[in-house]
Amino acid sequence: MKTSVVLQPSNIRMGEIINELLSSQDPFYNKVWFISAFANARAIERLAENILVSKNRGAQISIIVGFDVKSTSAEALRSINSLEVNSILVHNARRGHTFHPKVYLFESTASKAILFVGSSNLTDGGLYTNYEASSQTTFNLPQDETEYDEMLSSLDRYLHPQGNTAQVLSNELINILVRRGEVPTEREVAENHRHSLSLGDRSDTPASPFGVEIINRPSRTRRATTASVISQTRKARQATSAPENSVGDLVWQKISLPPSDVQRQTGNVTGGLRLTQARWSVNDNPIDQTTYFRNDVFGNLTWREWRTLPYSERTEADFDFYVLGESYGIHQLMISHKPSGEAGQHNYTTILHWGELGDIIRELNLVGRTFSLYAPPSGEIEPFTIHIT
Image (cartoon, rainbow, N blue to C red; front, side, top):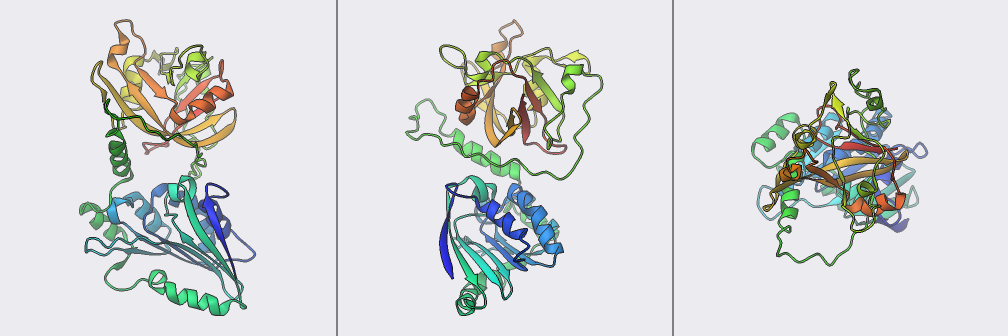
């Protein structure tokens, strides 16, 4: 028996470990448990393919999750239910008793077992970008069988939850929880998070004394599908092919980026990319940049007042980010819109703020490059895709 520590993101991500174990051939882990306080759809999306492959090879897979404090989304539960594995929801209806464990167990009968106990929820942050720590205990069987049996006995309440606080996951159960307001949508979770962040935007709020460490998310995994066909009426330069895994239409392109858009001008940097007209047309009609980005491209996002004088709005969205053929993962960026920026001269009114990517953009020296913006996959609000070539 051997015990070690997994530190994320210092050495490896839990999501990568889990996917590697799910796809392992030698040994093949024929019993798998995921036990987590919270879950979101993106984490399930990243694991789904290997879960299904493992299940089809005969593995018994159990996913046991909670939904307290509205941190598990309806989309996550529906994604889990669609996998058709043994899925259980755990919840104590009495206040103050949150279901909060994070346990992952992989067993290859009579050969090997690996147990993780730590802080990683079944969420994109928990498996990839948060600062997390988990103990990893490896049991070599049958020599460690006594210790393994003792561990199984101690964890039995979580591995096989019983009683009226445990319910088999079903679409009917999900719909009940949604109607009760106990399980929010992913959009509602994001809006609540953004609202809490906006509380610190007041002018009298001190600047944070903490710095930023960029931790890239892996590129979003998407179901195999053909990229949407771009309208034949668009100009030839607009028919640039999307990144390989993009499924959204090309909605805007800016050729020959100026220094001010990529943090390379002399003096104070703007901190963002100006969303200008850039000779872009839709169905052979030049766009009105003062409304196109706010109402058409980003119109489905939740906008809120940012500043009063002059009046401006802001919102945030996830962007799958590629530069010169390399993926930089998914990042949340702010978009601001100031109607008065038009100033009677049809100027730009909307800016995409680089935020945590600002230093990277400057270091890459992207002056003169081409910026392409793609809509989210069909039927989704996020992520958008940025491709700089």
